[in-house]
Image (cartoon, rainbow, N blue to C red):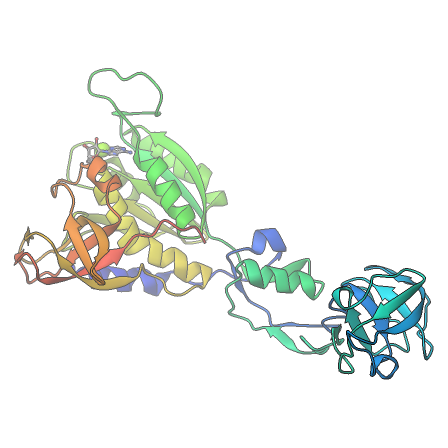
Length: 407
Ligand code: AMP
Ligand code: MG
C-alpha cells in the first residue's frame, strides 16, 4: 500500500496554479491576484472634509471659544459630489458636508457640533488647529503606490480597495472548475422515489458543496450508472468545462467498478491502495488533451468526503494559488479512547470544542464509512497515525478542523 503522504505528493507534483484571467471584481472575490495593483490617482483623490461643518481659514477662528464665539458670514454650501466654485476669502466661510471637496482658501473644517448651525452666518465656538477635519489628497495612497501585491488573496476589504483605486477588473487566478459526478446503478436523484436496492445520490451534493467551500466552481453532473460506455461518453462531454474531474464510486475491486474499468485505459490514471481508513482505494491521474486532473474517489460517502479533504482540497487550493492548502490542524485531548488499524492512517469523525480553555475532541459515531449521519454531526476529523492502534482517553491527538466557511 502507498502512504497518504506519498499519494498526496504525487498529486501535488501534477497540479499547477491556474494561469491569470482578467475578471470583474465580483468574480475575482476569493481569488489570488496575479498582477501588482498600483494606484493611478491619489487616494483620497482630492482634499475633502472629514465632517459636516464649516470650511474656514484657521486664523479667522483662532480666537473663538464657547464663551466668545466668532461669527462669520456663510457664502454658500458644498455638498459631497459638488463642483461648487466657492473660494473662502479671509473672514468668510462655506458650509460643507463630509466628503465634499475643500473650497480653495479654506484650510480647516469646524465641525457642525461646535457651531450654531447658521445658514447666512454662523457662530463658531471652537478654534481647531489648522488642517483639522481635512482629509488630504493622497494621504491613504500616493499615485503610483503599490496598493495590492501579486499573490494577495482578495477578500471583501481588498475588493473595496480595488474599487477605491478605480479598478473594475483585475487579473487573478480563477477558481478551478470542478465537475462532480457519482457513479452507481443503485443511485437515484434525491427527492425521487426509491425502489428496493436504490439509495439517493448523496455524494454529488456533498462533493459539490465541499468543492465550493474549497474555493472552486463546482458543476454537479449527478448520476452515471455503472455502464462503461455511458461513463466514457459523460467524461468526454464534461472535459470541455473541467479544470478538475471528481467521480465517486466504482474504484474498488467489485465486478461493476466501472470507473476503474474505464479510466485505467485513459490518460495517466492509476488506481492505488492507500494506507488510510476510510478511503483506501483511490484513482488519480490526468485525462484528455488538456491533461485535466482526475480524482476517482471511493463511493462510501464518508470515504468520499475524507478523500476529498485529504487529496482534492489541497489540489484545488494549489490551483487557486491560496495558502494554506489544507485544513487547519491542531492538537486536542480525546475524550474517549479510539482504535485504528495498524499501518493505516485513520480519519475518525469528531466534535471539537474548547473546554476550560483547551481543545477537546469527542469521537462521533462508529468507524463505518457509510455513516453519513455521524459525519454530518462532526466538525473535525481525528487523525490517528499509521503506527498507533489505540489512543487512550485523555491523550493528545491530531485534529483536522472542518470549518464550513466559503472563500
Ligand atoms: P462503490 O465505491 O461504488 O463500491 O460504492 C461503495 C458504497 O458506497 C456502496 O454501498 C454504494 O452504494 C455507496 N455509494 C456509492 N456512490 C454513492 C453516492 N453517490 N451516494 C451515496 N452512496 C454511494
Ligand atoms: Mg458502485
